[in-house]
Image 1 (cartoon, one colour):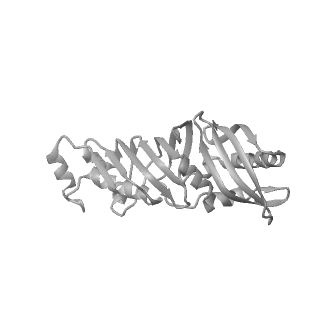
Image 2 (image 1 turned 45 degrees about the vertical axis):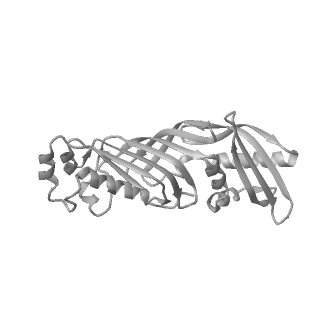
Image 3 (image 1 turned 90 degrees about the vertical axis):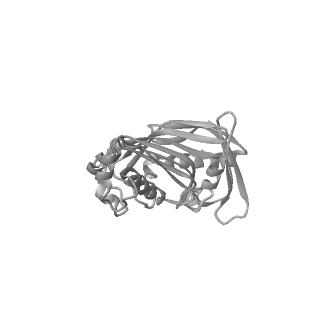
Amino acid sequence: MLRLKCVEPSNGKMTTAVFGTLPFPSQSGDQIVSKAVSAAIAALFKRTGKIQAAVRAEPVAKLLQGSVDGFDFIGNGMLMYNGLRIEDMELYVQAVSIDFSAIFSGQVKLRQPTQATMRVVLTEEDLTNSFNTPFVVEKLQRLQYEGQSLNFEKTQMILNDDKSLTIKSQIRLGKTTQTIDVDMTAQLDVQERRKLQFVDVKYDGDEKANDLGKALIDHVNALLDLDKFALDGTQLRVDRARVRNKRIVFYGIAKINQFPQRKMVKK
């Protein structure tokens, strides 16, 4: 579902005169831009739920010069092509200059970099499913333990009431059929505004399970660098991560040098 919210100009006659000759005469300029940006964002995902978009431009005629006072985007149920899912995403983009002529070809081009505040929500179910996607499993299996490859089964992420996170998984070494149950509880920490780290880790199990768990935590911490997951032309920075009600909420900013295109995540 796509919902558009537009700022109405104070001078309706002026708007009619300026936009009456556009390819979409029944739509105002901010509606056109809202639809184009929303469609471009939706194209980055395999599937989305409800999307609300609002372009702010007053007067609307300034869009012809590519000036936008701001752009707000709210979406939920956003499934990425790699299988990762985002429960909620909010982006509030600052004033930006765009190439208005590119809108009619379905493209969004920025004339200069901009910045957006963001709020991203992941549920416990999202996190568990993510750790079991081929995209994440392949990265986990790059870790070798005692010279053997690892096979992960039934990996589970639990968000606890005390704001800690528990990771459980059944791991087979090499071609053996016996599994090692790892069970680790940690706090989530944000370092350098771009690295998500599991810290103050407590391990449950025997010595072998603990040793394997420590190796796994080190490996996962090395993977959780936002610069490895950012789309081309964007840079993500997290100021705060909050664990509450079976959800992790990230607050931060997105620096946008160019409007992102769908791409494979950096390896």
